[in-house]
Amino acid sequence: MDEILVETWTELHEQLYAGAWQEDLARHRSNFSFRGRSDGEEGLETTLLRLGGDPRSLEVYLVRNFRKYAGRREVPSNSIWDWLALGKHHGLPTRLLDWTYSPYVALHFATADRACYDRDGVVWCVDYVRAKELLPDPLRDVLEHEGANVFTPELLGRAAPGLRELDGLAREPFCLFLEPPSLDERIVNQYALFSLLSDPTARLDDWLDQHADLARRLVVPAALKWEIRDKLDQANITERVLFPGLDGLSAWLTRYYRPRNAGA
Image (spheres, one colour):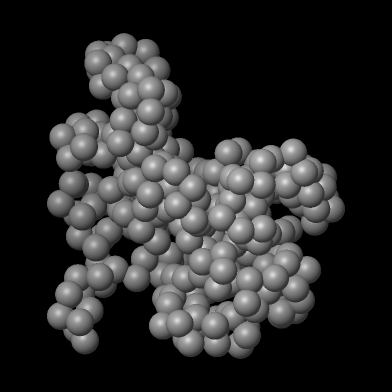
């Protein structure tokens, strides 16, 4: 996988939008999903793996009890994929990882944590269109029939109605991308999607090491974070927009008005 250290705001944009021109459409339409992290040393480990223990067994218990105690009205259907998306959205440890179609939203998450301004950040970029070509035939057939590149819960349920069925589609782990339902404004405003590995014990960065041509890793130097942050604020990419409500508003105001020389 290419690791690219960007040095300027302009170079960062060139890398984020590299390959976005679609000749057949005569439009700039990127095939990449983005994930920004404030600490560049952080890998692509799911919250389920970070929980410890046996991920496969724990996932069953977590999902079963989440469904039992959460209100049925919270999801548009009773699909396991709707429930996983809802759980991830509210902090449940899952095999899902957060991504976004928006490079600016990814940059927000690479620069939002003042405690990490002494270290480099990172934006992961993964080509979800090319990742689709590596899917087992039943999954790829569903997407091709719909003219889609990523799944919705309803589409994924056609080929794999449950976790066991998904795991059984191939012997080797594979990665798909899942668009969550519009559960609230946060999902919508963050232009969100999730990655999902067929094996809950696997790590996405390990999988990408085996498919290095699908991804690149943009290192955001600590020295560039303040410029990026100030320009994102002016572009209205802030907690107030990405986390609608009073909590997001308060987080934005606290960060925006804290002096630069104040502690984290």
